[in-house]
Length: 348
Image 1 (cartoon, helix red, strand yellow):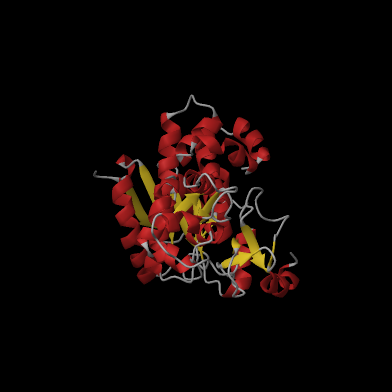
Image 2: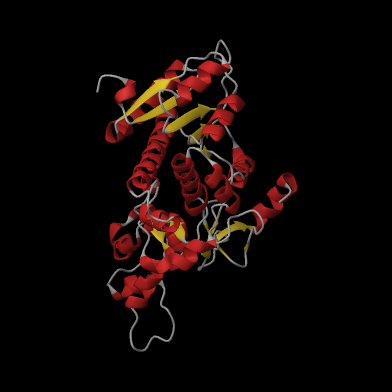
């Protein structure tokens, strides 16, 4: 394809350091080739130039924004970029240097924002890889929605998630915002709005907060399987492969459907079993021996996932951070010591 206008998708990067942009671009282009997407760097300029770079010749499929743009001349203000993306329903991915657990928790607290915040402790090549997977996820959502315009919203969401048939009730527990529905009716760019809002919902709620979907550590904790073994050994994860999530952003996982993990546990029960067996028992009956999961406090058994330490934790040694996590994220906890340490600073 000979020009940006002929490409179906675009990614616009706001990064004022040429070397950093080069690393971002290299990894973004690997994904851009898969989705036929051009990648360009914004070079600074007035507000009209910024707006044009994002929405012309058509709105970008993803904007990648470095939080510190002090090197641009003329300057570019990050709030201007955010405002344009919000107004035009363009997916926005931000990164900036954030150190420590306080900043990690602050980022989690922004789960309802119109943006995706990437862990900036990685180098620019890894940030670029993650942004590339995010780009690919939004493009998949946009393309799927465009192909199924006449389906109701719930069916389209289940389709893009590749959701199993038996999770409708659990899926409805997660709310992607009733207020947004009103905006959808009034929005001129309805399909772009819906696909962007759903993308934020999937990434910021379903995948960040274990509940209906769980990451490998949360899955191991729930299944009572040693987390290191579950993450590193194929024969340990293999019996649960049917529960893998294959929807948008899945390459940033793996993630597992928790109800399907329960189905697999149920399918491996014997006649003498009076209650649902653990994932570790499933493995044992298949000849795979593995240790039990350990709570971050050192004892056997956990069941939950600490959002701050990213380690297994049990109910006794953790706090359910109700009030600021998405409804339905019932595997998400915060270790009690961390909660006491951070709650005074963050007023949670």
